[in-house]
Length: 255
Image 1 (spheres, helix red, strand yellow):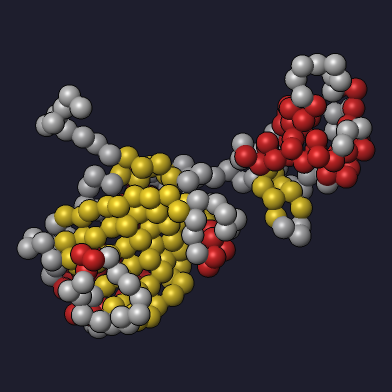
Image 2: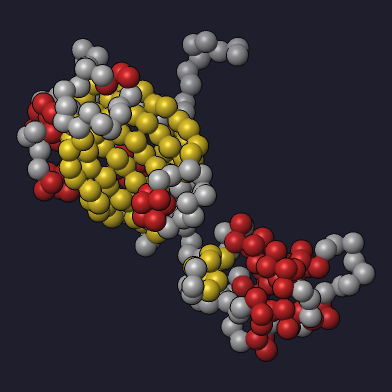
């Protein structure tokens, strides 16, 4: 969009009880919604000249639109019209593969294995996994939809299972299916611990979010029919894309 097509400075009402930055955000929102995803918007300096207001006013107006999801900032490159992001509802009340979530949401997803290696005793695991022999196999998977990275799954498997798995196995096969088909192990139950945390820098880089952005973090332990833990996965999920769903039955109603 050229600067000549932006709203004129007189469109801001200086005597209005509504702040100048809110008025600027309203005018810019109306114009930016007609632009294409990925298109670069004018700089703060250009908008300051057009609206005849201070740079801090324009910065607040743009930040409002970033928080609304209309704009996205790219350090060193500028501010752009945001791509439409997926909206994914993830149910944590059933024993199912993470990939099933995308099928239920009608979302195409591409996965990429980021890391594959072994952990010694120097890396702590949850207390419930204290009986796992070391080393433990760990690998990370990145999930991308519509060109947008939205989740990283960090999977840990005990040595008795991981020792028989190659990187090619985990690149091509979901974990639950691999447990069933390769090890005749049926996932019978899982428990989740849900939190909101700032991620490690490598995770925030993969998900293209600021290191200060809090992510939804799901820690899942899956067990077999005897209660033995088969796998431990930590899901790092972008909160602007994911919603968690839990279905409760009638038992215990009245809370």
